[in-house]
Image 1 (spheres, rainbow, N blue to C red):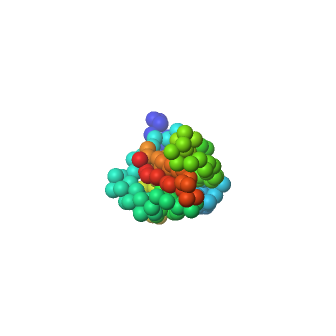
Image 2 (cartoon, rainbow, N blue to C red):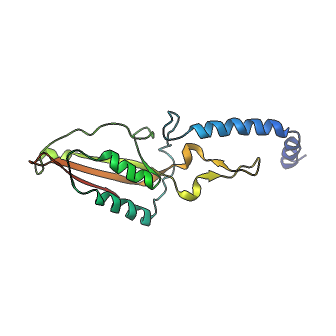
Image 3 (cartoon, rainbow, N blue to C red):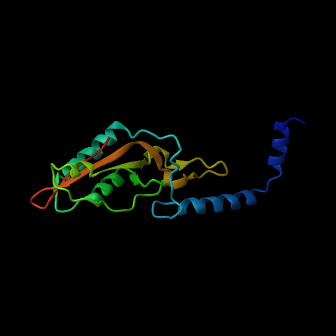
Length: 173
């Protein structure tokens, strides 16, 4: 008996209720994997995808509309704009970014040149959110909500002006 026939015979022995039980367990764990979950992590060794140029242009346009001068660094507003386009910033371990930015060097000084952050991004293409379910008619959510490592990153630079406001430059490259 060849390997293909043996595999077919083994497949016929499975009880559909057992398969559905395993599928339900799998789907419940996948639904828990949201960006708020401790289980959420992007594999940084995976092949990165490109964010479409039209999406990047729209993101950069909205980031630009925030303006350049702020009383505080508008990091949450920038992350909210990214979220509108199914994109999140990542930490070095592949989890959603969490932290603070430090530095208040005066614009034009040598110290101000070192005040930048380059965030790695994960993007969720709108057509890849769901994955085909081989055990039924319904599809299920992909791991990590469909987010994949992106080739592009978010660059943010800042310096403090003599007026006390921050000058911000930020864009998705």
